[in-house]
Length: 445
Image 1 (spheres, rainbow, N blue to C red):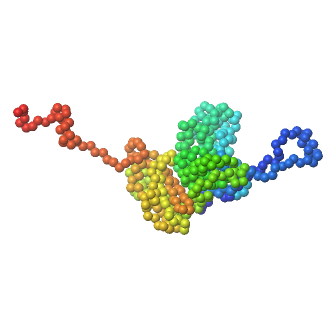
Image 2: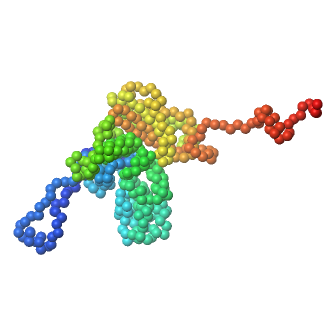
Image 3: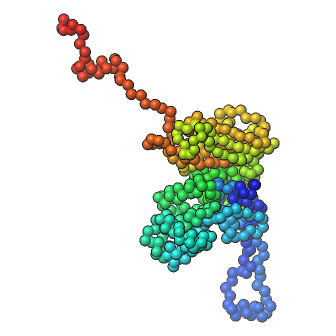
């Protein structure tokens, strides 16, 4: 069922906040009492502040989704709805799985409790039993790298130490969905790499990750999909590179037009960025795409199981479903390293592969590699189906193990040959060393 395939489903979600009902004036108890006795009512301000104006968003299970948008566009409000801090004013919100969130640095930590005590408290808040937290205590402490500071009050921690502890707890409570809001920007380079490796482990195990960030490079490199929140709406949802590219164009256009941004809650139109020429105003969501990817697997015809070897022939099997709008479809395959950097990309359009003008309702595309060619490491294959009505993306992580200690990323087809030098080369070498052979019956004339 579709419901089981999606981690988060939001339908027409609106979130509004009441304006202050009493004007901020300095008063005394005596003046308020006299006002009440005289029957004078304080003027009230009616109305609502609407931060999200009708969010329709589906986050597939097992995907890493980046949430982008300018400050004040509604991103943090969206995350607080997902995590249950806020409830929707209207609309439907469905969460399928256990959530762990990193929204505010050190949120939920008691400043006078030690790091160890806060691990126990936060673990229980996130749904673990006391015994489960204690069983994972040493692992959480080791990951945080706090050492002897783990038994000191957290009010003595630096912001980086707060982040280490918060991230260690959130990622070791075995969540199905991990929510992250810019918190990793606090860490140093070493811990950022360690955190990224941990999240890659989450990706490979089929966890869902929702990341809010202003670092578009991170979204391009690491996220399967991106959702652009603009003016309280989802302006675009799709392949991360496509969404961030249009977002950059809209920012540049706004700057060239000297557009002054105001938060969507304070403007009737939502304070949206200007429309980029040549782009649709509301692209369809991935679930509505004319060609939908329904399955992705890697198989070795020889029956070899993972980890594959560099010489293994591998087929990428892509199952799809299509409707009547699937004309002029294209399938793209991208091989990526452990950080999401593309190593090789191609598509049916680039290679002029002939596809039916109208795809069948259900079918399979096979991308056949005669040899994998990758060296030892963690990789992923990302497949995207494109048609004029939208896109659909699937990814699959896999491992490669080489039998020899080669370095690099790929193994080119090669062989070693050791042989004696040609005869002419032997003569030249001998003459150079003074050991040239003499002619028969030799001697000087």
